[in-house]
Image (cartoon, rainbow, N blue to C red; front, side, top):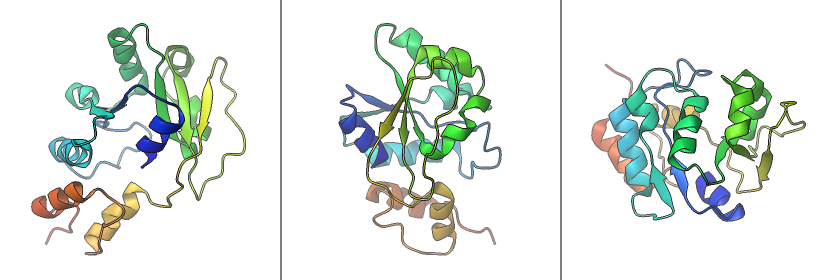
Length: 177
């Protein structure tokens, strides 16, 4: 839903979803295999021509730094306007991102409001081009979804159906016995 909101509100030509191998500011966040996360993403959007998937960070492996992907996409699309879409809760941490001063020169940022996190101020980063996305505010996050799965609660209406089927088939996020 967030991807759709950003795509529509900012009239993007394409939206490329880039799953991280390992987010640097969330060192213990990944709890399923690279193959499983890629398969769930494909299942969720394969029918929607507005969205593409890039496995550039997964193939690179290790910690995923946005600057590396920004350089990759800038080389791939040298004449396009590039945007990186983030949750509004990431704005206060943006100054901590690797090579942020170079990054803001390579692309603009679209931030999505989060229901439990109201953006009060924008980070003071020279050259930062920041755009707000007023989309559908959903109070869900990946931690909550994994916990719902562990507890045997339904994911319906939170996650695309084909991704739910994949999670159930592979037994993902269940407590090991």
